[in-house]
Length: 98
Image 1 (spheres, rainbow, N blue to C red):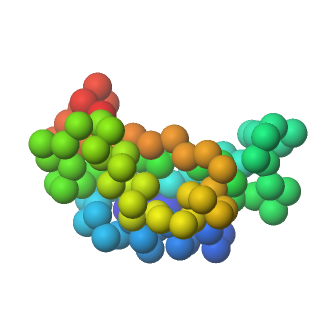
Image 2: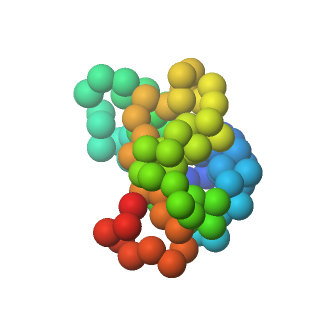
């Protein structure tokens, strides 16, 4: 698993996403790219890009996969994370399959 983001919010996100049994998990804090935009938090950890691969996504639509991620993250999305870009795939899918 690749986890370049290691602040407290990112760490909690990674901990919660482990419930989806990912074979690949990459979380990038993009907050600094959003300086001056809505939802920007000067302390960072407000905007993220997530790439996650898990067998639990098999047979699920893109929307169902995103809902699974949202459910796993729970209150973090309401209280701390302003924006989350999600790519959720089954390990055997190519980039077009998400």
